[in-house]
Image 1 (tube, rainbow, N blue to C red):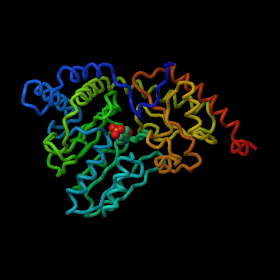
Image 2: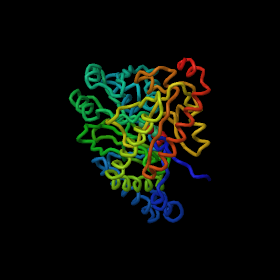
Image 3: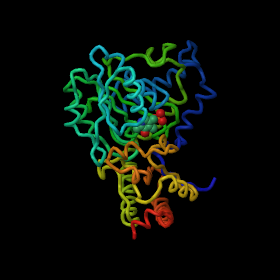
Image 4: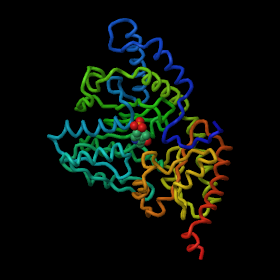
Length: 390
Ligand SMILES: *Cc1c(COP(=O)(O)O)cnc(C)c1O
C-alpha cells in the first residue's frame, strides 16, 4: 500500500508490534481455556490474572474490580443497564450529557423506553458541562451520573474531579466513559470518586474487541452476559486470553510513555492548530483550547461539505474523520457539534484529525498543504461561498 498519513487515532489505533508479539503465544502455544483444571489452562489463567493486576494498578483499582468486556461499547451498556436495574428501588432518574458517545446516548434512550427518566445536560461552546447545572439536576431519585472523561470528537476534557465530588456528596453513582482518556490522562479512580469506568484497548494501540468495565467494590451490579462463571459470574464467556494479554501490554507501554508521548503530541497538536488557523480562512477550532486531549484537532471549515473533504484527503493518502467514526456514513450533523451551538450547515463542514505516537511534523505539514488546496478547490465550486464573497 501507498504511504498513508494516519490521523484518525480516536477511531482506532495501529496495534503496537510489541502487543502482537505478547499475544502470539496465546494463540498457538498456550491456548488452554483459562477455566480448565490442567496446567495448559493454568497458563492462560495466570496470564489473565497478571493482565488484570497490571490494568487495575494503572487506574488505582483492585484487580477484583476489573471486568473484561468486548470493548468500550459493551462496558458503557453494562454500566448503565445494570445500574438502572440494580438501583431501581431507589429511583429511576439518570443524568448524562448531550455529547456522550452513542454507546451511552442510545443506551439512555433504551432505558427511557423502559420507564427511566434521563436528564441530558447541555455543554457550553467549548463542550464543557457545568458542575452547577449538574448539581441542580440531581433529585432524590437520581441513581446514576454518566459523564464522559474526554470527548471523542472535539477532545474536550470534562471536570471529572468536580463531577465525582458532587456525585459522592449526593451519594449518586458516577460512571465515566474514559475510552478516549485512558492512556492519555493519568486516572486514579479513588481520587476522582469514580464508581464505574469504561475503557477499550484499541484506542491505545491494543487489539480491537477487548475492553473493561471498572466497578468499585460495593456497587451493586448485575451480570451482563449470562452463562458460565467467568469474571466472577458477572460476564460469562470464555476469556479472550489473547485480547486480555494484548490489552495489558498496551496499557504497560502506554503508561510508560504517557508523559513524554502526550507532551510531544500536544506540541504537534498546537502546531497543527496554529497552521490551520493562520493559513485557512473561515476555519473554526472546535473544543476547548487547553482542556483538550493531547492528540485531538477538530475544525469546521465554512462553505465546505465534510464528506467531500474526507474523500479528497483520502485520495492523497490521508486518513481523517468528520467526527465520530460511527456517524460518518449518516447525513446527520454530529450531535456534539450541534450541542456546542454550531448551526447545521457549519457542523457539516467539520474535520477531526487525531494524532498518534508515530505522527510526525512532516506528515502534518503535508496534511496542511493538502488541506489548503482542497478547501480552496471545494470553495471555488460552492455557490454559498460565491454569494458570501459577493
Ligand atoms: C470508541 C469509543 C467507544 C466505543 O468503544 P469500542 O471499543 O469501539 O466499542 C465508546 N466511547 C468513546 C468515547 C469512544 O471513543
